[in-house]
Length: 216
Image 1 (spheres, helix red, strand yellow):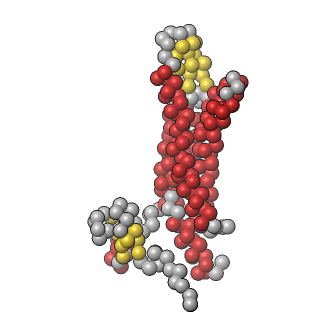
Image 2 (cartoon, rainbow, N blue to C red):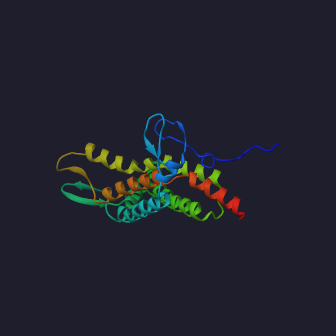
């Protein structure tokens, strides 16, 4: 006895993202490209429209913003009125020189590894969802949710600078000011979060089913 393996999309069903009601997709809804929930009456889509295009666009902008975020100073330490600018990498180097290896590792992971991993990972997911090359929907879906979870932790560097600016304030002796890189780094985090939210992981499964039906 064989079990049916039809997906919700193939069965003309869609889950409302607001109230989580399972809706039947009518022919009229297909023509309008949107669905009205029978419970909350909100409109939604069976698949996010232009998901890959939006993800690619936001992710590219995030990559562009990530470059000046690492080139410009992220904070400036003033001692007796003399400013000492510090980039993300030079700040990590200072922590290493002072023997504060755990703090250096945390900052390096949150400020360099996580943003780069998310940007590269989203490019990979878009490529796999578009081409279907070496596609593993179960693995790639878990990878996507991991990227989505890790994204906000990149703001740790911004929080550290904000905390230093608020706490280290001793008049003309010592003070800390945020550098121009803080704006670009914040934009990088925001853009990657928007890019991750624009990506629809269900497209991975759609691509797999299309490949299986076409026999390649």
